[in-house]
Image (cartoon, rainbow over all chains, first blue to last red; front, top):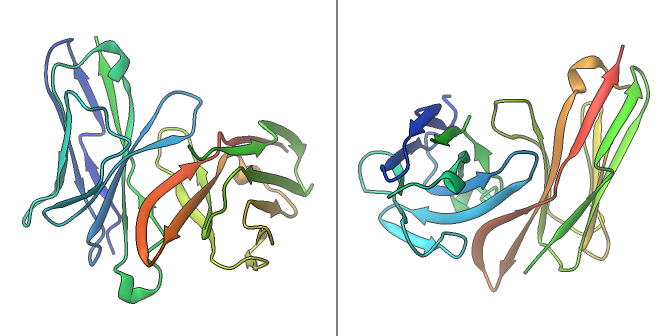
Length: 117
Length: 115
């Protein structure tokens, strides 16, 4: 079974550009989560999505950040007009459906390391 | 908001020694998870705990869900060089049958194992 896939692994943007980060959950998983990690810190929750729905976006900045998980295709985390403070590792996770009894177990992808110049 | 205090921040041990780390919270959680992260990679799930008092093992790893639901610990026995990495605890709260899905992470424990 393929794990959670993220691309690109590394992304370099200049201030003011847009960054698009992609995440494909594990096969059979319909819940997707995005987290941000600053150097030498733990991961911070950003947003929780199911197919075509945002369930909880309480950790996402109100401006410039958006996320979607369309019916077809990967989940996308979009950062508009990036600033240097957006430089971080962004991780996507997915979890099994509730019917599995393991819906609280989140499996992480390898991350996208965003550098803003 | 919810906060997790993880300790120790770092550990330097000799190969073969046992290791213990713990997390405490100001809030209760329904689920505790322990992850290991290698440099440049995403966290890998080691152990999931679902019930207060639960003790679960995965090879040389043992973790417990505290009775108060506000703490958890992870033990690694007979450490080996490949145990090197950063270990994170994470708590999740489900309320009223609704999965919030939001993991709260500790700050991590950096483990170094000397051969």
